[in-house]
Image (cartoon, rainbow, N blue to C red; front, side, top):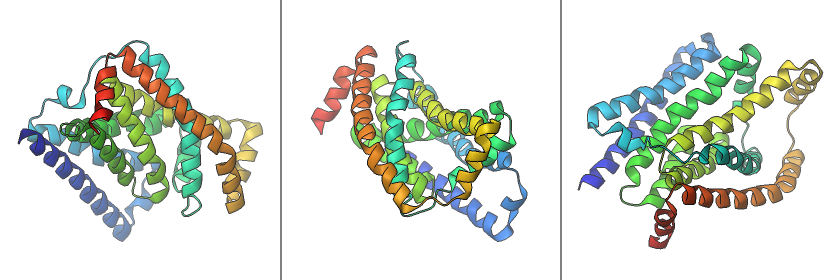
Length: 280
């Protein structure tokens, strides 16, 4: 059927992304060219690996871009609720990140430090917040969720979240990216648009950019930040973080779901969302 053909096309799209990622990684390992490029070039290449196949997907499949990614207007109140939603999700991300660090190293923090210390604030914001918010959302909440939801909305949200995490290709990032991907998928459904997910994705990344930039550009805080980055985070410190932040994570998650429900109401999608869970 047409619906299953669209799901198959989204699956092939993701498979192509993964093959491209692995091919680039292998080339980088055997040639060592990653050691000779700047962090700016590194990020642009990684985003290009997602963006170019996304554009080619619509050229090849001839799907309606606006209809698939749901480039729809949203209620003006959505703009004010989304930053609150992101703040409520942050403690959850902190706990999940700390749990993952019990088993693997956090590699992304070093890369983020290079960006915020080596470039201007606007450049760092563009590289780490704005570009991923547009490119990754078009691919995962646009192409993948936009097609997977045709037969099973809730299943599509879970699948797009899982694939979003898998795309990061390391367990530390994958752990919290899956959670974030599912929340962004729910956000896309309660608003009926990809624009809120782009805004939420931007806000989530921008928090890290702001903290990192001002931490390393304030003379009184720079020494503290550099000292902290040189010390290895111990298991005891991670456990303390997990235990202390879990109540905030649970409370924040409850408020986040309440905000998602409010977004469904003001965007006129309450019945669609309730129906999505009733069918399950």
